[in-house]
Amino acid sequence: MTAYNREKYIAEAIESVLAQTFKDFELIIVDDGSEDRTVEIARRHSGDPRVRLHLNEKNLGDYPNRNRAAALAAGSYLKYVDSDDLIYPHGLEVMVRAMEQFPDSAFGLCKPDYYINRAPYPLQLSPVESYRWHFLRTGLFGNAPASAIIRRDAFQAMGGFSGKRYVGDVELWLRLGARYPAVILPPGLTWWRSHAEQEIKYEETGCDTVNLFYSVALEALNSPVCPLSPEERAEAIRRLKRDHARHVLRLAATGQPASAWRLLKAASFSWGDLKLAFSSAEKQISS
Image (cartoon, rainbow, N blue to C red; front, side, top):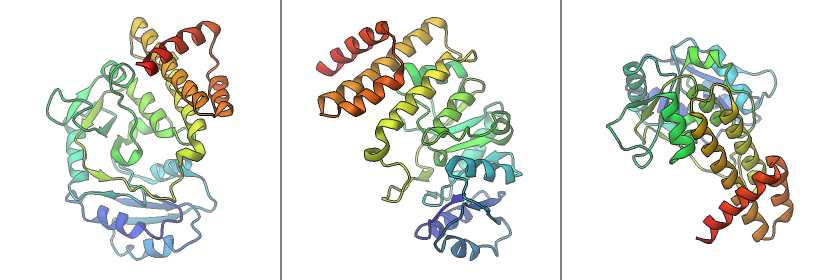
């Protein structure tokens, strides 16, 4: 559990972890230089031998602090519960049992039925199946760390989170998903709290975030370890560019030419890319 100025929520988050039906865990709380009562509240739970509190000497930021927490862990799995979220009492047990059912999988993601409804949970997807679901169907890797469980040795093999702001989780799922099978877990194991103090606010970061998601997706598709066939990869890139062009067109149409130009510039489209992407995007928007 990483924490920064979460005095309003951290007690509930900690208590949700301590209430788990699965008992064999360590709760590592890493405070990133909080200036409120976060540390004081966390210390109230230090009587439980499973709780370990660490204080960073300086503020690391979101993903570097997640890496710091992982480096302190000794268990087989990493399960992030953000200090403003909750995990339901059965959540950890369901996740661990699912991962043990598929020991060659590197990570598990909670997904609702409308994403994948071909078999009862949990189910395993191979790298090529994961990439097909993400790039050619309904999407798969849009999960925040709170709704995931990660095998610690696989996390270490990938070097952890890269530190890219806003998209570090999706980037890690893409890197893991290209190399290892993934486990699809049932929804409703954790609760993600939406509040005004969260780091990502689309009205402030939306354009930059869209650019970042585009760049990490394109990097994954162009990687030599991308599991898709050449034909599937080409189709996935075409769809990715089309969707990016759609964002550009919508920004331009709603009186935001500067933001539209930022998206377009960041995409580094060739003239051929532009023609194809905008043509398909215009057709989809008009329909």
